[in-house]
Image 1 (cartoon, chains in turn green, brown):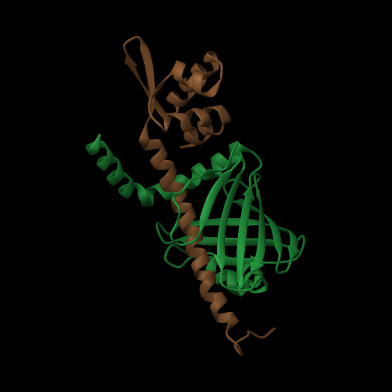
Image 2 (cartoon, chains in turn orange, red; image 1 turned 90 degrees about the horizontal axis):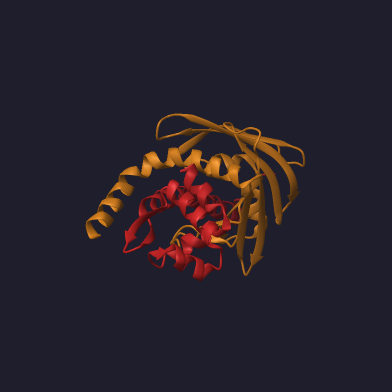
Length: 171
Length: 109
């Protein structure tokens, strides 16, 4: 199956694509060398700051053992409804400044981790980051996304209703 | 929402949805355009209909299928929400990258 761009071309430079049956690919460029981007991705003091954007959530637990076979675990408290959700996994490959591979599971589906491969490509002072999350099957990707959807939907339902109303009025 | 994803996870059904994006089509139109056999097309269309992705209207002696907008908008709204989460994370990373790249302000090893 071909890649399906799923969101309009974003202004903020972050693209997301569903690829094949099992992958979600996210890309972004940073005005920084790959070595710096890699540090921000793997060092706890930095992860604490970026992983849970403060307007939406905060990170209550952040355990990082960034070595091959090392484990990580984050617990995020959502601003929306004050609930917590835990994510955890294991580092599989660490190539500083180049590539990072780890598993990631969400507490609701502990036995269905995705494998996340992050590659960094430095060019002319900028670094392109490509993050590919591969789920074990189309069904798992669907389930994980659909579960997240229920959360996301609550937030965007009002907006969505407005769009639907608008379309209905135009029809 | 799970239904939406599962219905779209099959390549032929995705092809049918892509075709219907251009406008309503009869079963025969879909068969001609995609070269998939009619019984399969009918089966895929009924799966898409069960998932709420298409609706059917009789027109003379033909059944015309068209996309329903809402499930796609729901899907896109969530996916955009997920993308926006990562966009927000990356914006935070920008700030950190700016800090650690300032000369003489390198954190101690």
